[in-house]
Image (tube, rainbow, N blue to C red; front, side, top):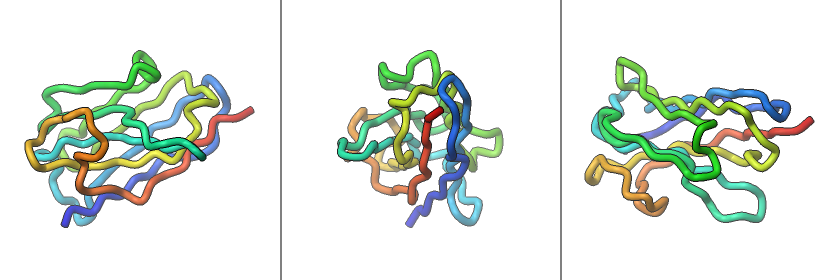
Length: 126
């Protein structure tokens, strides 16, 4: 089963930037999977933040992060990144990467992701 590992979270001041990384253990290729970033703040439901379909042909973003976050894949197709700029306190959450191999497309539904990482904490605070 695909195992995902996130990294790059931390504490940042409002207006700052962070880059999250998501890789499959063992260097497994993510090329045939839709990869999404999902976040969960305390007391709130999981929220889809961004998704890239297989091979990175298309991407989508939640309205709350459009223009600030960018999802991308590395050339080796083993890592997916989430570049987060102009961070706000309301971006504070645990961020998870997740994969869907059923169709390799982003369905828009968090429940369609079958494989999940352990999550990385992002805290935006002064």
